[in-house]
Length: 281
Image (tube, rainbow, N blue to C red; front, side, top):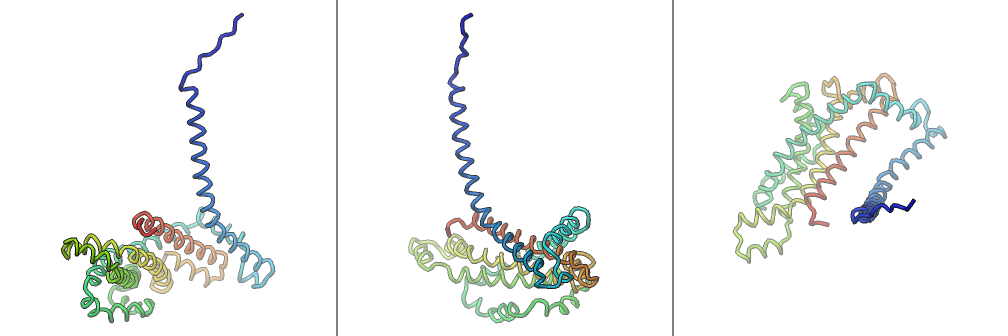
């Protein structure tokens, strides 16, 4: 019998080459993401190690500080089998409502105020005064205005976040790079064109910093409001209820859920900021 050789087509040769190139590409991408993952994972691992050491060495009474594995187990059970996920969603929803109000009202208002130093100077006292006043001190006023309920919680958080957004957007416009503004004017751009195409873009980096700060502040105020303003659900209500019945595992599990929410929102905003304000890098 004579040997029958299978014809080798051009496609059969190019396929392994293409596969090797794709594998190299994915390996480089995986290596890049693994480097980033190591950076982000290092912090939580360090926290768990310190927590585990403090619990194991009983630096704090075991009745007050359960170990990390027990707490993470409670966190998992409450998320999967309990109603922690529902409370997580309720707090996230209120935070996003408050932040959306602050961003929609605050960005245009801040840009408008920042376009004129005299105009911003006329309201600077009000912005700085209320920005320096703790939002929690405003609870009684908002209770009188909106009553006991979710409206009061969202309103007071939106108010606190709004001042941060106005301040950041206004100062972003005020501190726009003068050379670019002057260059646009020398090239014949009108005031509206300079404002629209130069000053707004110049204000975006500082506006994004303000937005990140604002959503973190909105979350803090919502958590405190859920604790003390007639709320029947949410992570704040859950934390204070667990503390009152001395269920510390559940209390720490709810605190972890709050931290996960805040950290995730921060990462989300960093990703959006890098995407939108690409020229600052």
